[in-house]
Length: 180
Image (tube, rainbow, N blue to C red; front, side):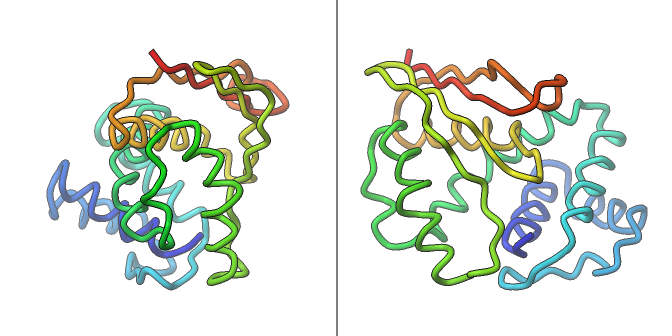
């Protein structure tokens, strides 16, 4: 996983619970990187899962809530790092299409080894967009949070649900985003 995610997770944890809590997580996690991250580095996915697991344990919250909160928080941070042109999209659905068709394409040009989630759009009406979220990392709750952060950015209100979810025993994750 790219280092920007780890750097932003560090900032997220410190903003919510302080630097001492971050240091406690690193001490308990005993990561091979020792928690020393750069935005351009690449790190083992398991390090993020370990850190999220420790937050879940220490703060007595669910993995879903932890991933969702980080996703919602990190949207604005990822937008700031997004390729030129990513700021032009003012609608949630338009932006989600742009993630697949433009933003991830540009990210891959800069980082060919980046393992990015893919969206397969299944259906769309003026108020509902349904898509298949595909990622070997299974961070669908993180994706839900990002969609909510995106909605805040565009000034729209959405409801996000998963009609299918691998964490619930389904073979895939299907998200439905409804503008309300």
